[in-house]
Amino acid sequence: MLRENLTVHLDEVRPGQGNVDSPAFLGGLNRLDADVPLMFEHLPNEEEYRAAAAHIRNVAARECIEL
Image (cartoon, rainbow, N blue to C red):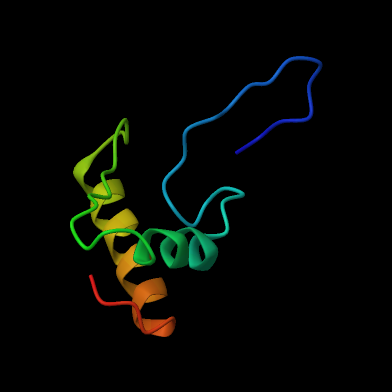
């Protein structure tokens, strides 16, 4: 999540909880070579990783993007 402070500060949150436009992001990745990895990092626990993956899979399915 991008804060509106004097200096740039990014809070790391799982996909779907911040300000990134997930459909646009996945659409951009989809236009690249087929073998582009998408990784999650710095999430606090396994449940958050599962939720992050579920969000990305749901967005991809809605946007007809094959993962």
